[in-house]
Image (cartoon, rainbow, N blue to C red; front, side, top):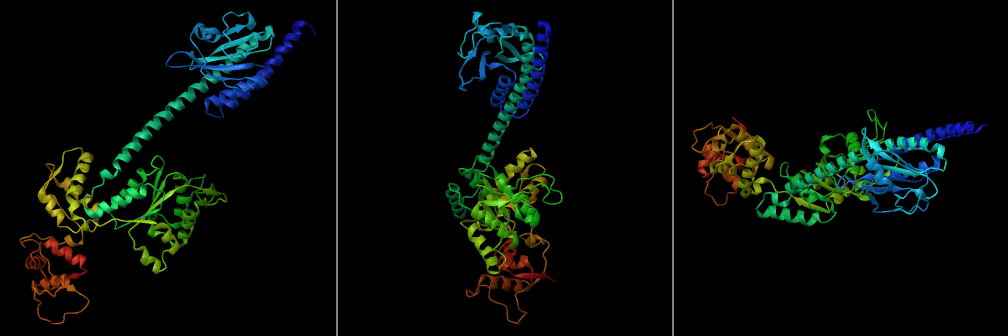
Length: 532
């Protein structure tokens, strides 16, 4: 075979090897967005499959404009830190300055070679090519030492340029992902700070003694991973206390996941809490993490825990005791580190005695109970709550709002069976009815059973007559003396109603009460009435 034919065959073999090498490099570049790890693997492929030794990737630093060494392939696998080249400095800097590939036929004969790394073979050639992205934008330099086959240097330079272009696209993508990730982290941290500020104990309203006890308990338990059971009537703010506990705990930087247990049947509740595998049931088209997995390292808030069925209570007990579970349709046991805060408005002790709630689950949940008082037991907090809610609604409606003393007095005489949630609804309704932004008594519209038949203090309103059912029929006894000290409050209210002919406004005047006050007492004293 002639010399020319031998070189041609050698070139063809090289092209075949380079094609296989490009395929291997493309697979590496599509495998991960970890730039250093990806480039390290690319340089290994170039060394083992492309016969290119001492591969090096240096990337431009956007702040200084210098080339910073990112990865170097060397036999001893040691990394070299803090190596940089300014534009025009050494072969790397020269490739940037001249904006073109450089071929050094023998490294020992090149006076501009700085040998900062001390790993290159001085008898071998060196090829340095700019790494380009988005057309002609230079983002770095790729350099390597090919074998001393001078007639193939041009082909190897072209091959390194192709690899440099592939690397350039990966560098841009990795930088964009890193930038987006940084922005998302900033936004996440900002939102966490905002939520933590809004969920702070300083923003929880309650100057009464009973609420200060609640806040003290919440602050104390927030320090630990203890399971908390928040109890109280609907609308008392149980979720707000759960928020405050999480965001003042060591888990504050991790997830806070919420689930209303009353909103789902057992089969969907199991999937929501524990997740499911693909194909576990109709509609399970992919694997899905449950709330316990999502809350791993953080806190899971289970609202309305008293609504779950006895069958599901056993499944929940296991994960609370052992911290392990299986996804629906799966067999792999998963372990999680989750703090559980539960809430209920039901009497769990009564349900345990009735066999409707597992006793062992009750004790597992009731490690640290916090009792939220109803609004009627902390009426002194109503002025502060009302003003806070008016400011909140003012921000939502983007207009100035204020509340007057007459409105506050009206709110103080209501029973608030719906607690703070009812108060918020009342304030929003009053804001809508207020045309000038001032909320006074005239725009307060209270709802609830005791206000279905409103009457004013003067007795000139829509008085309605009621008869009272106290558990026995009328017994023909004479009217009771309202000033009799032996009468309890319930008997005194009933006596006043009888004397007033079942007109609540008149009975209120006999007892020196307002119609709202006597209506409230009819409700809390369990005096059942029916219209006649």
